[in-house]
Amino acid sequence: MIRVQRRTYTLIAWPWRVMSWAQAPEGLEFTLYDVVQPVVRGVEVPGSPQDAARWKVAHDACQDLLRHAEDVVRHAHGVRCKPGFMADHRTVRLRRYGLMPGRKARSRRLFAECETRMRAAEEAYRPILDEIESRLARTPADPA
Image 1: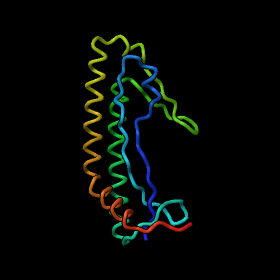
Image 2 (image 1 turned 120 degrees about the vertical axis):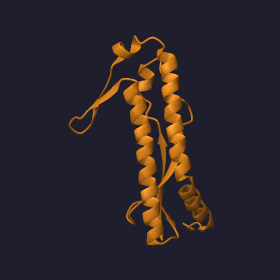
Image 3 (image 1 turned 90 degrees about the vertical axis):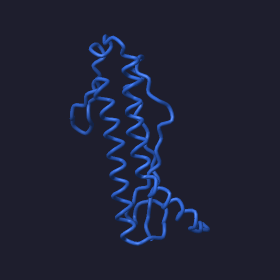
């Protein structure tokens, strides 16, 4: 048995509410299943250790692609991260990017490219997601 935990990946909303001209798309939510240790809370799914390794690799690759797409769009909008103690400190270059002509159209184009990258990552992960969900559907629920 393999223990998996369902996770939802969404765009982090912080910098976009500061930038009135940035138009982040709605509904960018992606479902991922992470293979977790037996002591971590999750759902057990029938499968072999090879399945678990394959699922873990696919999860990590999809999550890395989603994060990369988000990092690219944040950097293009002027969001910079500085490493700090216990947490990263994010700054937004509002003045520089706020004065750019055509910033709304540029923001829409950047988010469209980000969404395309994220949808491509989702489609690459889709066979693994369907396999896990079909096994979850066939697994009897615990009578607890």
